[in-house]
Image (cartoon, rainbow, N blue to C red; front, side, top):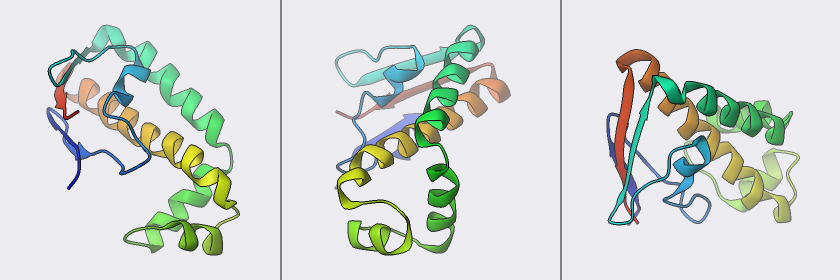
Length: 123
């Protein structure tokens, strides 16, 4: 069982890594019933800043994780430690930034294509 978001963009929050309110990071706060998000073109600078911050936090690990996930259909801590330079105690924090980056990129792409991005996130 997982927590999903749906609307103009859809996906599943990463289990044990990503909170349902992760899109708050990009400058629009969800509302309490679900988390309802509405981004528009005026939010693009904040979305881009969030993406930039994610990439800064990830540094060279982004490319390493991109390669890992291209080769693997899933992950667990053991696989990540064996196939990347990550240490076990770093995994949760690094994956949180990586998952957040992917959410931000989806939001940005949606706003750029449609002029807005609306979605609900399960709590």
